[in-house]
Image (tube, rainbow, N blue to C red; front, side, top):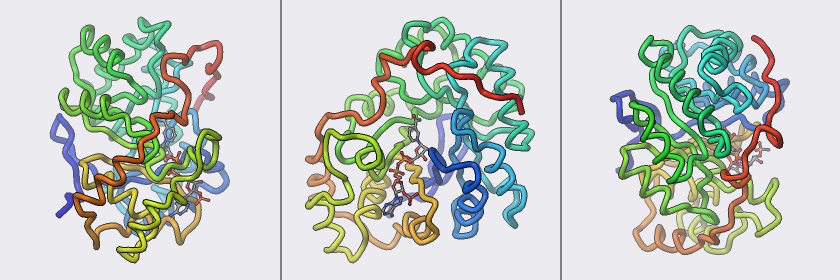
Length: 294
Ligand code: NDP
């Protein structure tokens, strides 16, 4: 039986499946999040850089679901790294979301060439945690060496590392590192979105013959098989869709179980080819951009 709730290293719990809104246009975000809450998602993942925090907050405020039942996660963009700048970035995000407290606040990327700024930003997250402004803190796209550098200079072990994980890019060494440190791995592009909306290096995970074959055997869809693979391996996953049928489909993964052999067949699909930007190459020059005030 797969747990539908996961517990972070500080005891805070969250659903095993959340709802992502990267590339969801602001004007479609209220409808998408409203539908997600209606069909049962209780965790929304947004980011300052997505430009739709305000609409995420509007959908939560307008829904019948009590705010206390929705786990709200957002990310600080690199342009707001630095102790004071990151404290202010919390105010911007909380203001747009219309919430007093953010459930999970994470650093969107490491800045390898300015790790001093990354550390200062994380220290601001530690302050926000101590002050009760956030319930948990974490990171995203941190590689093993980034985690080592962070842990050497800060005191709170991140609760989460949100990283690219799908059948074609599995990052097993990083998953093991997260697990050894007590950090929950949260899979972005969990159904391989980046393999079909951006990455030209290989085909779509949705059309992979092995995944299609396993899906047929269970009377489920390829997306559902990939989400099940994450859950059975203990990862949190945050699929994104703006289409009501797919929003519901991606949550409907609790009525079947992949066998050990099926999990191994999916494990064997790893290509080692990353779809997203190389974490080591993130710089303020190439990726910096201003995050508007609330
Ligand atoms: P996903 O793996 O969630 O795939 C999303 C894509 O798949 C969209 O094009 C969507 O289109 C389509 N889709 C969704 N459900 C189905 C389905 N059942 N069948 C077929 N197609 C489907 O990729 P994302 O990159 O969006 O990742 C999910 C979330 O992870 C993001 O929304 C964001 O919250 C987070 N993320 C974080 C990053 C980071 O750097 N920390 C980077 C990237 C993502 P449609 O909407 O038209 O249904």
